[in-house]
Length: 218
Image (cartoon, rainbow, N blue to C red):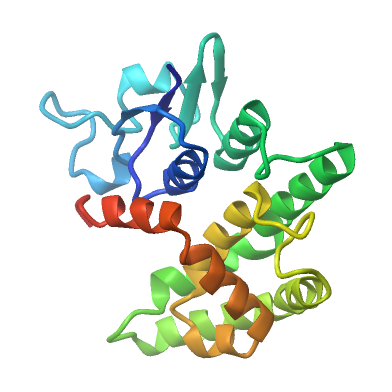
């Protein structure tokens, strides 16, 4: 059985959502981020990203990590693309062309959107300071060109990124853009993106992941 290391209040959520979609039975090992602990190296600290045993799995000290036999993968999108292709079916690429497109959109989300979306998540809550508001405004400005690209792509397709169907590419990109959803007005300016996010997040596999995530400490 494959083992997935991480907690769902992290990028591990992407892998858990996909596993739910695929009906995969993964052994799950909770690994908390070291920065969330007062002393991650204390003798009584929970298993975390600074634990020597975890660093032996991923020397980068990041979650998630997947172990499948003698293979270890340590990037959430690499894990998802691997799992989708290993399992096959409609979420996986049907051919080399779709494989390239799914990889392209996944990398696009990381390079064009993730840092700015995270800034919105971290600084967009209630009771924001003026500094927080400036950070969110700048992040939205940085996201506008990327959102214009995605809005046009979704409007020109059947509502999904690749092949006219829901795939691993939609999971990967939707999970990045989830971070930007506190900027609800900005999302609403892009009706194709808003409808696509709604469709992705209405899926039972996503809702099951989020319900489990909500049971973890904030």
